[in-house]
Image (cartoon, rainbow, N blue to C red; front, side, top):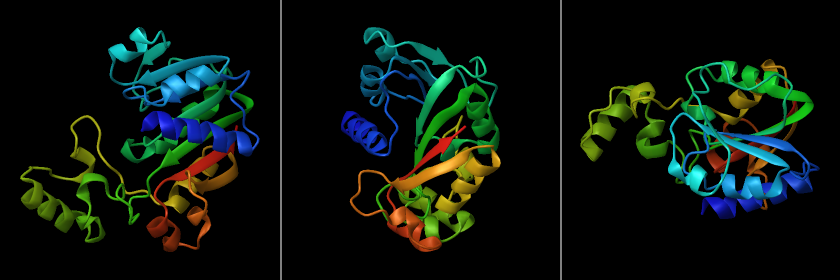
Length: 217
C-alpha cells in the first residue's frame, strides 16, 4: 500500500513541477521503508531516516541514518534538494523546531514535501486509534478509548511511549510551515480528484483524509 501511495506522491509532485530526477532527497520517519524504495528509485541520491533501525534498508541497499527529529539533524546545512515526510508532524512534540531543521539542511530553493492526516478528519485515519471519540475532547476521549480498547493511556502525548499524538489542523500546519521560514507554494489532498484541503476553516479538516504541502526554503 505504501509503495502505491509513494508512486502517487511522486506523480502528484511532478505534476506540480517538483521532479525527483537529479535531486538529493532525504526522507524523515521512513518507518518500514514503504515509501523509501520508490523515492530511491526516482532520486539522484537518497537517504532514509528514522529514530528506529530497520534491517529492510540494508537488505535493499538504501542508505539510512538513525536520528530523532526532535534533535538537530546529523546533516550538513544546505546539503539537500528535497525533504519528504509523511504522517510524522502530528507525532512531534516541537514541530516548529523540526521544520526549522528542515529549512537549515535544504539548499536555497529546496523543497519540503509534508503530508499528514488532519486530527479531526472524518476519514479512517482521523484521530488515529482514538477515533471515533476524538471529537469529545481529550479527557473524555482518553477515558472512552481506555474502556473500549482495554488500554491504560494517560494522554494523547503519551499514547505510544516514545511518541505521542498532537491534534493538528490544516491551517495550523500551514502556519507552522510559514513561521519556520518556508514559502508555502501548494496545498492539496493526497491522491484525490477533489482538493478538500482548500475548503474554508474546519470543513477542510473534516473532509480531508490526508493533507499535502509543498514549501520552498
